[in-house]
Every structure is written in C-alpha cells, then in structure tokens.
Length: 261
Image 1 (spheres, rainbow, N blue to C red):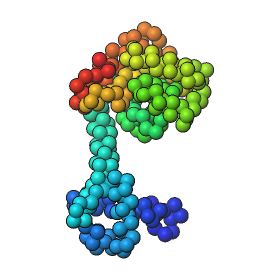
Image 2 (cartoon, rainbow, N blue to C red):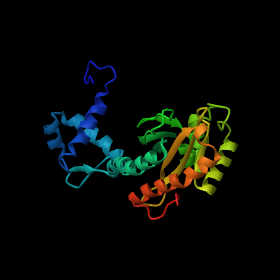
Image 3 (cartoon, rainbow, N blue to C red):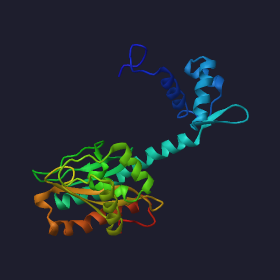
Image 4 (cartoon, rainbow, N blue to C red):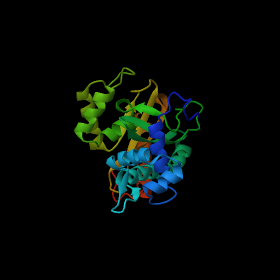
C-alpha cells in the first residue's frame, strides 16, 4: 500500500499517532524527548499528538512526564485478543459439528449493528451455504444477528434499527420494529434463533449463543443448510447439537454459566 504525500487518502496526523502507539509495543513508557528521537519528529508536533491521545484515553502521563498506555488502548488490545481467542477456540467444536452434519457452521459477532463472521467451516455437501471470515450480514435478517440482538438493551436494538433500517430481502424478512421486537422476545424465551429464508430464499439457519467469561452472550454459533435439508424434523435434530457446540465454546472461553445450556 502506498503511504506518504503521493497517496491522496493518507492522513499524516493519523499516521503520526499510529507511529506513537506502535512505540509502546517496544517499550512500556516513553518521554516526549525519547519519542521525538525515536521517531524523528518535531517536539511541538509530537506534543500535540500525545495530548490528543491522552485526551482520548489511549495514553496516560505520570508526574514526571512519561507516557504509558491508557485504558482505551488496553481495552482495544483486550478486544482484539478476545476475538482471536474466540476464532481459534471455536474452531475444533465447529469443525466437529460440520463433519458430523455435513452442513456449514459459522461463528459471528455484532459489530456496528451488523453480523461479522469470525470463523467458518463449510459443509461437505455439493449444495451448501458458502461463507468467509469477515463477511458482514444484516443483523435483523440472520439467525446470528437476531440471536445477539435478543440479549441487547432495547435502546441498542433501537439504535441498530435507526442506523441500518429493516430492509426486505425476501418475503420472509422481518421489516417492522414491532415484529422484530416480538421475534427477539421469543428468541430470549427459547434460547435459540432461526433464519427461515429471511436473508436468502432456500437458505435456513439455526443459531445458539456463545457466552463469555461474564456469562453474557457475546457471539453466536450457527448452522446453515438449504431449506430442502432443514425441515422441521431435521431442525429439531440439529438444535441440541448446535446448542452443545455453542456451550462447548462458551466453556472454553471461561463462561461460568451459559445461555446456550
């Protein structure tokens, strides 16, 4: 990627801030003078960068003027670590479920009101759901998204609706706030979420919650299959396996209790 003055999309001030943050991977604390020498930057400019990062909570400054990572930077690092932990600890259980059922199994989280796939194992059938890590899906039309929204405060659900709306993808898509709230209530009661061809005709999905170390649903595990292979009887047979896999991942993440149980 082209970086520098020739790149019309390059933000020099942001780049300087990221260079400063990168220094804390090499040493736990820095003075202004040390950072200026390390980065070859003007002290006056660097002072403004440091002040901005402090104001945002990414850095702190002690009584003698040394800078160290702040709570916001620790929180960002912890979030990245948790996502990586989720990705790799979920892999063996979803591999086993995909091999056992022949269907595609995936794990997703909510990010900015959309479902982001963080891990996936495709099924073995010739006709199957295709997915990929990083795929974004509308929360209101997917089993994983509805499952995760079901455990959010009402205000956060309203925020997602306001930001993304409730666009129709098929005749089965939920398109009104009232219908969505009713669906989310039912999901909380039953402990799983279906997708009845709501995002794509001919595709059904079941999802169960993955809970974190606090016992809070923070991710969802789903299994997807063509509607022709997921009738009511097969859904009933798959549901306990999906819940069991989600519970296994939850326990690996240190969850004391599990909404997937």
